[in-house]
Amino acid sequence: MSSVQEVFAARPGTLNRPRRWSWRRRPRGSELAWAVAFAVPYAWVFVAFVVYPVAYGLWMARDPALYRELLTNPLYARAVVNTALFVGLGVNVKMFLALLLSGFFMRRRWWIKALLPVYMLPWALPAIPAFVSFHWMLIGEQGLVDTFLSTVLGIPGPHWFGDRRLALGANIVAYIWKWMPFWTLTFFAARTAIPQEIYEAAEVDGASGIRRFTHVVLPLLGNLYLVCTLLSTLWTIGDFTTVSLVSEGAPAYSTDVLATLGFQYAFEAAQPSLGVAAVLSALPVLIPLAIVLMRAVQTREVQL
Amino acid sequence: MSTITAEARLASRATSRVGSSVRLRRYLSTIGTVVLSTAIIVWTLVPIYNMVMISLEPEGDVFTDHIFPRVWSIESFWGVLTQGHWYLEHFWHQFANSIYMGAMVTILTLVIGSLTSFSIGRMRIRYGWLVSNAALLTYVIPASFLAIPFYRIMQNYGMANNLWSVIAALVAFATPYAFFVLQEYGRSIPIEVDESARIDGASPGQIYLRIYLPLMAPALVAVGTYAMLLAWNEYLYQFLLLSSKSSMTVPVALAQFLSSDQSPWNFMMATAIIYALPPVAIYYAFRRRMTSGLTMGGVKG
Image (cartoon, rainbow over all chains, first blue to last red):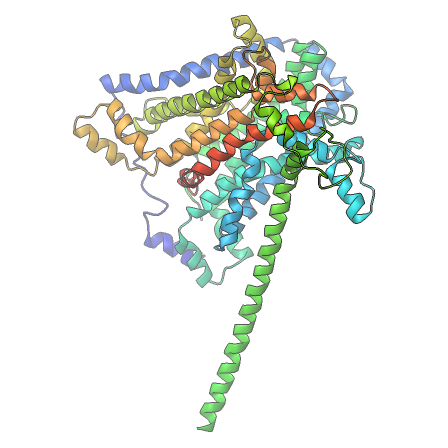
């Protein structure tokens, strides 16, 4: 660790560069007009397509009776548990594996370099066909997975969508398959930005393998990891596509998450207010996450 | 004399032992790498293989009991390209709609995102921090949670079945991430560059066009690819908002196949594979720049 700090001391410009990245005085006069004009398009988009729908949604779900109805509904309680499992397992397993795999892709072998573009393929593929493909792979005796199990290994495959735990697991696996590459690329890019000298200094100090990971990579990427995990959590709590295409809620709506349940209330049961209430009931979880995210985005200094 | 040779022999034995342990470690690490690479390839390609296999089944029969198709047939791909099935009557129109939508989302996200991050990050407009924090608030309520109110609003506006309703939703959702990447990357460009241009008499508009945009090119590529893939992956909003023949996009058409159990699945998978080609091509075209665009600020972020 000490020589890692020496590297920083020797090269003050590497990471703790003085942050004079903005105009030194606030813009005035015509410059201010330019600056405001540049910010106007986004302000308009934000008000028209974020603030207004949010306010409209809150207004739709303003009746407390809706929440009482939800609390007495066993489907809702199960959807809350499913969402927690789907997000908790899916996001954390995905992010941790992505962090480890980004280190794997840093290795200098030609076939690893060639592997990265193949590995990125799930991200570039559109979600619908990918998830429909998962659905058919696991559809039962005729699916690819069970066919493989019975013809090659000689064991009968399970009914993936007949069992709640297996169906939930299938959703999580499909979700990880689709989104892990994107985060791996993010961490890979961050790792390439770590100056090579730090690794070399750590190696001289005898830190390699796991110790290099815990003492060099984690402190440097820790905040980025936190930001990405929070962002991904917020995105995944609202994930509709995975569950609606992979397990389709089977068996008997027992794997529905909040997003698919809200959709069913709104469009199949024709109770849009109840649907909005079901999804907005996640706000007490979402708001603290967003506050932590904002703070983490503002933490920029590397702490060693 | 003899002691020297004995020492030399000892030393050489020691180095050879060290050498063999290094070689063993390198050997083990190669094996580990090969095993992990194989696992990654299998993990990545099995669902894709399943897609290709289904699309090549001649009778549209997904429910087969074999791992390799017995007969290979490209009939389904031909059927998609010639709009040869009644599910696919308007395939090229839908494809054009998808491309239009993807292009508009990408362009608008880049324009709005770069203008705003220039204003906040470079010109340091007062209350700029408020804008970027407010933008992150977009993610407090996930997009799918807003689908129902959004659907109502668009119906009130008479914007249902209008591609622009989906474009607006996707731009609103993509720009906060664009700010995040652009501002992180922008920190790597010294502000002195902007200041010297100002001293030379450049207006903020000129600085934005001639200095900021060219210097930000890698980050813009990363953001653009992200926005395009977001639009291409999106399903719920398109499914809800676009149902007429003229406004339908490929994901909605694919969802139509799902509404029946007797659909021609080989045609569906062939459509899906053709639909997947543009983003894959774009990703591979830009992937080097994309990594460098995400690189800056990674450690700082």
